[in-house]
Amino acid sequence: MTQTAATTATALDSLPPSSASAVPRIVARIRDDAEALAVARKLAEDFERESALRDRERKLPWDELERYVRSGLWGITVPREYGGAGVSYGTLAEVIATISSADGSIGQIPQNHFYAVELIRVNGNESQKRFFFERVLQGDRLGNALAELGTKTSHDRKTSLTRDANGPGYRINGRKFYATGALYADWVPTSVVDENGVQQLAIVPRHAPGLTIIDDWSGFGQRTTGSGSAVFENVHVPADAVIGFASAFTRPTQIGPMAQIQHAAIDLGIARAAYRDLIAFVKTRSRPWIDSGVERAGDDPLTIREVGDLTIQLHAAEALVQRAGHKVDAAAAAPTEDSVAEASIAVAEARVLTTEVSLAAGSKLFELAGSQSTLAEHNLDRHWRNARTHTLHDPVRWKYHAIGNFYLNGKKPPRHGAL
Image 1 (cartoon, one colour):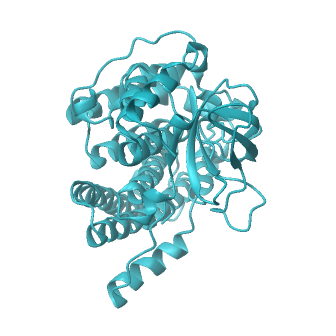
Image 2 (tube, rainbow, N blue to C red; image 1 turned 45 degrees about the horizontal axis):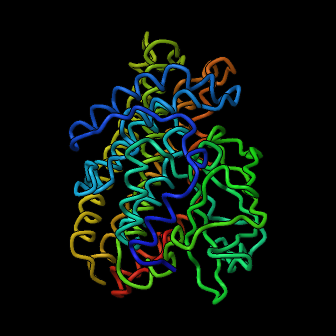
């Protein structure tokens, strides 16, 4: 679906400036993993301050996202040879978890941005890499228009890519949902089915004629992710902006586990946020149970036991995410059937535990903090709502199956982005 290098560069560079950032951004260039982690921690302190307010009022985080992009963090997975930091997948996961602990919605918004950057890295031609990587480093945001409603399974697609009868390139027609990040994007990577029935990824300018992004996400959690609809009505896309999608999974690549470790990181961050608020509330506001015989809720022996159990779960989840990051790094360095399978299984293990601990932390918060914690002014229920909403992204029951089948029967997991 791609052209020669010379043709690609010419066609992509001919796109009007208004199709990407209307105003050029001044974006920092992060040099390495350590700097990425430090910048993420600093931003998280800022984002946490009004996270409850943004969730309560569904206040879209435009200003926060602008600071996030200008920090340089959205470019950290661009390879070093193209000017990026080329951070490890473990570092990427920790950056996402750190931001998600401050605001789960902001933590999720760039997930498909990083996913698209990775697809370009694995399947793009040289000119596509040069063009899009430089745009990303300059602050352009890649959104997402992958999933659809009304298909037989969540991975089936009906949005069509057909040759343009009036000239070079293609036309896209279809409707997407769960388009996380598209509302805020400069480019909208879109999964489409070509005339041969093969899935491709078309990277469409956000303001392309015929593309409409609708802010109709009404989920009770992750409320400001902008995960609504994207409608494509005869939208033109140059042939050079189409990248192989299905082919990224027909051979061993790190694409699938890379996508999933980001989801594990989002859940881990949400768990950290609930745990943090639980500890603070019990220390400062909760009262001990009448039969405990203690003066402080923090001295209640049964509360202490439950906090200890939750702490162990959280630390175990963190360790599995770190382990999974090493496995994905190894798979990217030497992608084979075995290395990619091991990475996928390691990430699935992490996702099981991050799912469970994020839900447990959001629930234990109320159990241990007491009735005061349910008051609307605290908005502490956002942690459980965020966890319950995001952990529905891919069913954990199938991760248990893949893990057990791998270790018991030597069965390699399926290669796709949803394990």
